[in-house]
Image (cartoon, rainbow, N blue to C red; front, top):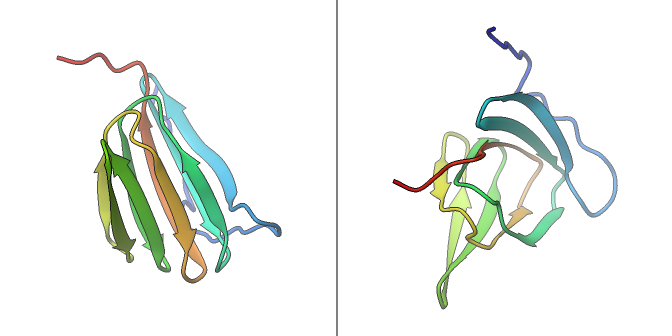
Amino acid sequence: MTTLVTDTTTWQPKDGDLPNIQRLLAGPGITLVRLSFRQGQILDEHRAPGPILISCVAGIIDLDVTSGAATESHRLAPGTTIYLAAGDPHRLEAREDAVVHLTLQRNVTAT
């Protein structure tokens, strides 16, 4: 069965400290999530159980990624996508209103 989702880039914020997080679709081994940030909202440091792609759709997002003892900072603008390995701690902060797509791989085994 084919799953189709439309209107994935619409900014749908919520009030408060955290962005609005919405699962847009899920299939075997993969999930697509939309995060709608208001300027200044933060998704504090956390980890994903599998590899992820973070894609900036609109706005500007600052991303901090910790790998080993080092922390890397990246500024994501529209059209920018970054890959993070499973378990890498990361934090996102909106520099302006923004929409981010997060693609999560689940149940992935290392080869």
